[in-house]
Length: 295
Image: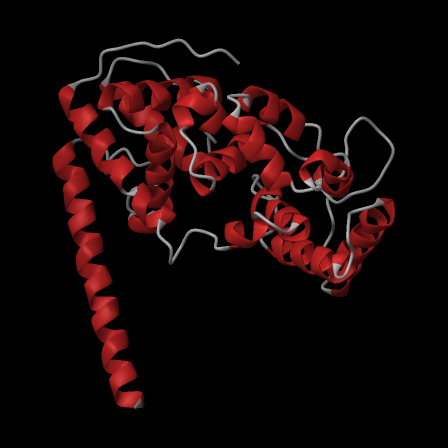
């Protein structure tokens, strides 16, 4: 998965890149960024549960309720264990299935990180049982590899887990870099921190069209985002996270489903951000009034 740099970008695209990268501060804010990372640094079970519940189901078509089932299964079955083992892998999968059946949901076992079956892929639990040198802690393991500049190794290792491919592996590593206070540029190749979800892909497509560059697949989308980050002198993971905030949290998805209007130019982007500020202020003011009335 090699990525080659291509430039230049028009000045207005560079300006938008810097502005959108700044939106990542919303994602990284203490109020929003998963506080589980603090506990994950010292608890293998918290780290494993966070990886499974918050990351492993982030693929197209995965029911959001799977996150709840995965979290509950690991917290219940792993409580009190000093270390992960094969029995936990079986118990966690059985509990996940029980929760799903109780609510009339399927389990999609072929791509579930908790599914136990023979084959080349590992369950997430089996994966961490092999991390004895890091006290079975997937966060500590990933942080160590990134600290050594071995992000590519981390990506390929994570892909050994059932249901984990480039998108989820790079998504997790993007956040680990930040949570571990590491330098992304020293942690490995830039693409290792570029999960390409629908919003990042759409932004890359729009910016590509404005820059005379074709974005035809996920690799070329990651290439464009990393190149733009370099040209705009921002962190690649910030630009990636900022696009997600813009697309999933700030725009009217019915009015601009592909981001082409919002990212048509800097002026259009500023109009959207200004509208978001007005809406946010109205929400805060209303909640403040309600709270005042309740007291």
